[in-house]
Amino acid sequence: MNAIFSADKNWGLGKNGDLLVRIPEDLKDRFVPLTKNKCVVMGRKTLISLPGSKPLKNRTNLVLTRDKGFTCEGAHIVHGIEELADYLRENNVDTSNVCIIGGGEIYALFMPYCHKVYVTRINGEFDADTFVEDITSEGWSLMEHTPWLTSIAGVEYRYEDYTNPNAKNILSEF
Image 1: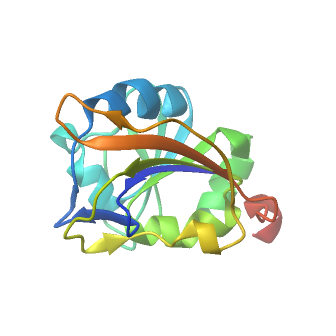
Image 2: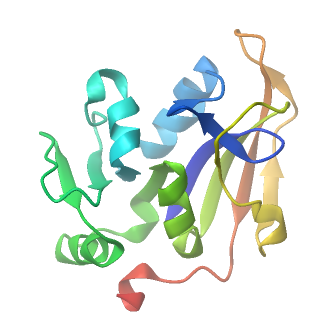
């Protein structure tokens, strides 16, 4: 499994259900290529935050929610990590083609199963209410990063790729 997110210097992800900042280049040059034609896993609130509250096109959308009555056309709804593992197993999904895309609770739940994390590091500190763990202190290794870039929106950022050699296999855990 993989995860992808943007985070500020304090590992802040968002505020009030939205991203801290919008980086159009990140969406076009990183998020879309890394998730297109893959299986994306998100929470219900992340789904609702997407344009039109609709699943992402050209992806298998898995939405994890505790709400047993929640439905969404074009998405597969699961109600726990075991149910998600069952879906992956039953549909012969290669876990290297699964990408965790948010939100904070979903990242916390699945990070132990992620082999790679693609971080868009925002060079700044923001007023955030949603965070992801500081993976630099959790056994993750920084494999590569780009130089600092500046978006058309004036945000300074860079891409950082991390790997976790001790990631658990979700299919053998559940």
